[in-house]
Image (cartoon, rainbow, N blue to C red; front, side, top):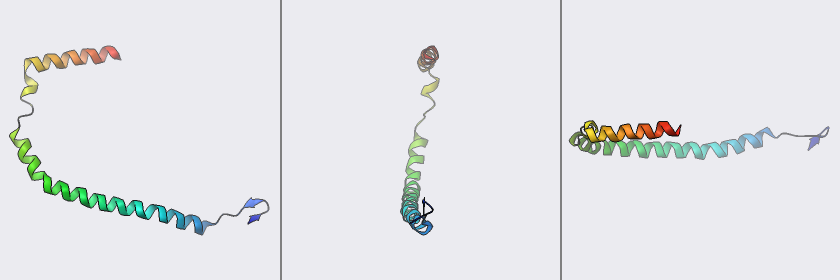
Amino acid sequence: MAVNGLPRFNIQRYLISGLLTVIPIWATWIVLEFVFRGLSRIGSPVVRAVAGGIRIASWLALPRTMEVKRQLQICTSSIR
């Protein structure tokens, strides 16, 4: 109902609507956090073993790689 031509705000309705919106989002966050933390705990030993067996930085120091890197830097700086 309008009082003096102004709409009446129903705070209880807005509060319930807000809670019905926030609670499922919060529950989804909790479930996803639980799942991803569990998956990361399960997968971390495998990732560490694979990463320990790969020498990632060794090929970055090769002369050809350094030349490609310089050329890419020149190209990107000329674009700006």
